[in-house]
Length: 169
Image (cartoon, rainbow, N blue to C red):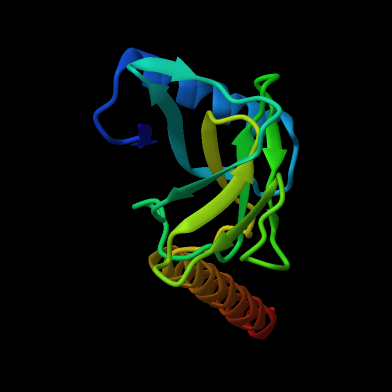
């Protein structure tokens, strides 16, 4: 039985899930990839007769749904948790029908299929630059506009006052 569980940073999770998510986020931060933010994490476990099976050395194909947190894979790099506890980057397969270890594809149903020799976790990392929210952009433009108005008004007042002082002299 394949058990796939999405761990959400804002969802209900166990203490074990929390420590797993924190370890993944710390590892991604240590990779020092520009703009890297963990978008989604799957815990992927394979069970045989209720015993956890960790495959190492044999490549298997795993199919998972697109994470709830993602609408597409634009700007997303996918990693799997390797047997050393580190993250290994999955490469987009050239031939989706013939996956090699460390490759992934998106099938016709929109599910992610990947080949691995170690079934554990799947990490989706967003490496696209963060987009600024529209309201933030409006707030910045408004603040800049107000500063410009204040500066111009101050300069005009200073010039008018200076010209009046010259007339009095």
